[in-house]
Amino acid sequence: MFYNTKCDCGHQNPTGTTLCESCGNPLIDADGRDILEMRYDGMARRSQKTNPSLLDKVWNFFSSVKIAVWIIFITLLASAVGTIFPQENTFLDMEPSQYYADNYGTLGKIYYTLGLSHTFSSWWFITLLFMIGTSLVICSLDRVLPLYRALSKQQIRKHLNFLVRQNVTLVADLPANTDEVAWTNQLGALLRKKNYRVHTDGSALLAEKYRFSRWGPYINHIGLIIFLIGVLMRSIPGWHMDQYMGILEGETKPIPHTSYFIKNEKFTLTLYDDKDLPESIKAKGQIVPKTYETQAVLYHCTANCDDTSGAPVLEEVDKSDITVNHPLDYKGLQAYQFDYKATPLLISVKPTLSNPVTGESYGSFDLPMNNPKDSYQVGPYKLTLKGFFPEFGLENGQPISKSNDPKAPAFIFSITGPGLADKGEPYLYFPRQIDKETFSQDTINGAISQKLKIAVGSMEGVQFANYTTYLNIRVDKAMPYIWVGAAIFMIGVIMGFYWQHRRIWIRIDAGKLTLGGHTNKNYFGLRNEVAAALNKNGFDVSPKILANGGNQG
Image 1 (cartoon, rainbow, N blue to C red):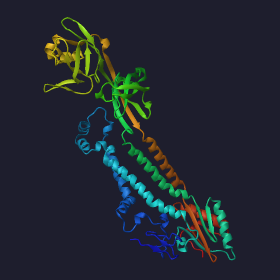
Image 2: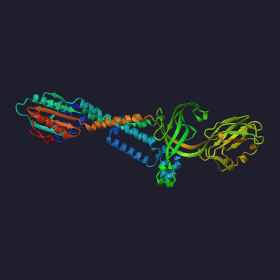
Image 3: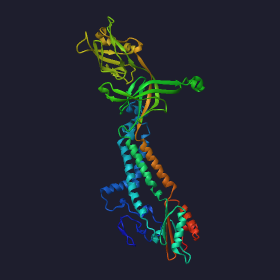
Image 4: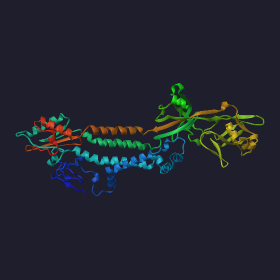
């Protein structure tokens, strides 16, 4: 427990002060001989306040280095656990719960159930990062403010007990008839040549250099705080995205959580010639891609961007040939070539509606396999879409879609028009002939198949996608903040690593020289500098003598 302490010099020091703010005399263990604890120059910190309030207790919690280390340890442990299995955002067209169970068994299922599959976007992980940032801010303020106060009002003439309990010290008698003030000024001139800033008060001297290095750790903290802010900003909607998309040739798809659409106009694959491949690869019959490229167009949606509100109004904003490591890049949105898959799938067909008995054609219409329209007008008939199944299948007698890929597309229309019921009659249409036969399209349609027929007249109206290209869509508006934070952190590291704050105090009382020196590291360098300056000033002394306890008097 700390008490307000009044120094022998008459200065009243605040609670928690260990060295007098005025003369530097130790207030605790004043008669001891141990080397002084010079952290923050003995200034009081807020975390040492007596009778703390609730706010002070919160401050004390986050100002504790021990607590900060525990929070960092828990965060590192959580990060390690989060990398045991792949995170959900690395999947492509997979159901997470099924993926973990199928690939990692019971452990994978537990991993998913505990929510570890999205560790880095979870509320508790973000809370840990926020606590680290709070700890950095409070730890810095709790220490940097007292240190600044101590260094900004240093006394030149320090207490003798302060000087002799430094790590570098010397007590000796000056030669007789030495002009104390002149000797002190001459020593100050020598130290200035060593880049010291020298202040004198008669026969007392304070020499100091590289004070800025003391702020290195706090510059580190500022850099880390900005870095953490950048990481936390990634959770702001629209600031960060790292998502994978599969796009068929000719297909236009919306980019999730943005107002952009991207189209795969054409995918080009170039393979290595057999003569360029080693015999081991040839023997296995492997196909080795040389390059693959997606001719992509980026659109900005200006109206009807919601799929349910009608056809979106798109404005082309960028066009690029995407290859590996050469993405489409538009205003921070990047689309990287990630992978490809050979997928000969239907993109669209142009079927004709006709009378199967008379052969009369009523017209044709464009029918895409992705996002078909709600209704089509073909001659006197209106076709209203009631159901769309990209990969048609039956389960307990009910139609289902096995996947979202158009591997066996099927459409259920309600057709109204001449010779049909007013409420419309259902018609099941399979674009592929093999599916017509597999599921017996005409038999299922029954009587309406004798009145109307939907069929593709020629292959000119059929579009296939031979490949699906997989793109990695990235948006990271917070990255500049992360880089700035990292750069500031490195500046702090350099400041604290390559320079040391060195101080030398001297006072002469009735011909007796008392010297004390302190640095935050590299005492050998400080002793060598002091010894060299004393030797040039007519005072023969070796660096070893300056080790604490050196006494020639």
